Image (cartoon, rainbow, N blue to C red; front, side):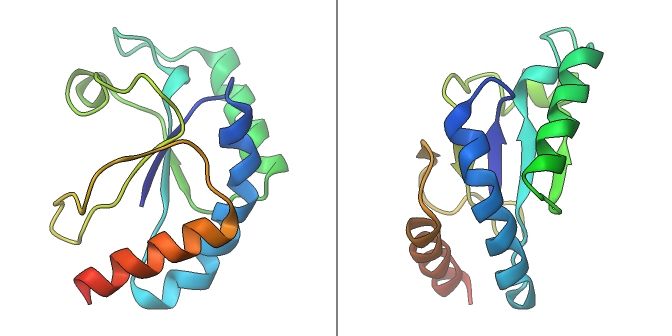
Length: 124
């Protein structure tokens, strides 16, 4: 599960503790959540240190233990260049293929559980 979020996005931050719990719950099923914090890197690939520190603080206070990535210029130029809404979530199989459509907006823990179960049933 690839969850793209921003430091400015209240719904993104609000769902992060639930995603952290779900990351732990599903780890035995070969399931991993990876976050990408969209607004710490500009279009030239330069990192805004203030935003990066803010992202680190958000990750800490939401008890997130799953990996979060800082976008590279290559990521921005390819699959992130059309991301205009956050949170934006994709499910990817072990071969790197997208499973289903992207999901816009935040979800409750129960809603994410249903979606995750559905996606896992498709690939298991």
